[in-house]
Image (tube, rainbow, N blue to C red; front, side):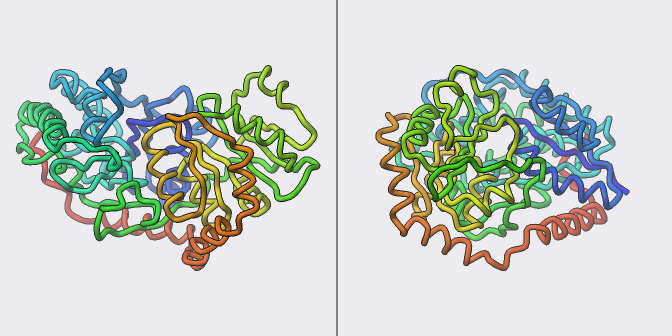
Length: 404
């Protein structure tokens, strides 16, 4: 069949790889060779090995310090090599060689803009496999991702100009056509938005095709609920999650039965919040069980977990740790299906916030409205549709973007 390269460049933990895994399995079952380029091999290696896949480390550079938080996708690029044409040339060269070594006939790019650039220079077709955040609207300049903050248009435009200069310098070295706009980087053979319009990080995107979310990778294990008051709560926290200790204090005080998945939880923290109604687990939870049995979820706003609970009609308390998660949490709060805790502000009284989520029926009603809208949505069908579309792309003519 065909050689397919999954490319992951930016991000952390298992979220991106886990979201792609159900599709990777289906592609393998269809006879394709799926190769992986991952940015955190030390984190995802065990997971991939357990699934029978091999992997290569993606070319990356350490994040460069820049003033303030990222304002646009161009600002993110400038933090990871796009402010220096020489650095970007080195990264593109690494991606190109990986594509050659694997004989890639198609690249599935997941938050991997430099893989897009490398594939362009080689004329390899790309499916932009995106949760929304990684596929900014084709506006020039790329839009402000912090619309609540007033940013001069000149500042936004200059970010595009700086990144585009490096991109065009690299394209010139490979004797490829220059780009007119930085947004041209995302002009690929296919854009697959594996999310829902209500959860798109860019609410102003305009008309787009949304495939919907993929099912869980199915790597979780069942958990036993502790004794405690109902409703039941499920929490997914990390040591780096903002305000995680304030959440634990609220759970301890409320007395509701809660399962808390907290990988790498410091023993001292676990001892401090030990209680009969709190069950701490250090392995991924069975999400089908949790979405079915828990009444409320508390997460750091990972899109996969957030979507799973919304499809089950369950409200959420969201503690985003970075911009991508913040934008998801903001969309959930806008639809009235959850509450968000701003990571840049004190957490306030989270016991009262959770009590409101429990006692105020409007949160459940709005979450159930989302679930009802997509009641006929079939996540397994999405996989089948993507496999068929990929087969069509492989059968069609290759892109002619590059010349070398």
